[in-house]
Image 1 (cartoon, helix red, strand yellow):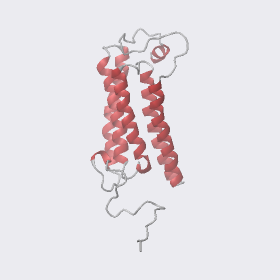
Image 2: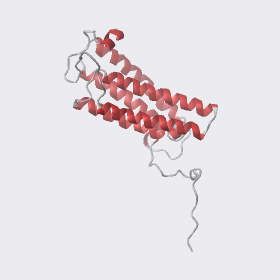
Image 3: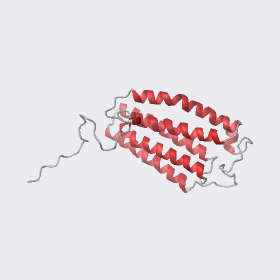
Image 4: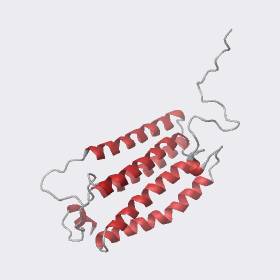
Length: 202
């Protein structure tokens, strides 16, 4: 069934104003979609720095885990935009929400298994639930809607597991969903490596 939908031949695709029109020939990505991809380029850059800071098997495992999470977030969103037109206002607003959540994930990557673990988990769970809930809400009952209802169900089931696992990670001075102002230091935390104390002026 999914193969038929992917090929654009299934009659189950709803006829809505926000659905892409199927045309013969190549379908180019919109400017907004390319801008969306830039967020994930930044996230991959963050992953590379995370591994470079600690080249070990443990860091490699952490990097791989976060890479898989980023891939699924990107993959399911691009799959959605295969059907929904990013040039329409509702779809664009959903993509802005997904980009914001993805950016929070990218910011959290350096401490994704530390004090920003909850921020990473909340960003991932939020974008998966929010995006799939939108599709379920705007499409009528049918095979297409059922596919996204199943994906939404898995997202809702897995979200508490993500948050619970992240909550068990030791954190220092974390606020809501692991967020606190960037650049602030937690009590007892030493300055970043490589920072130099300025000598008092005479």
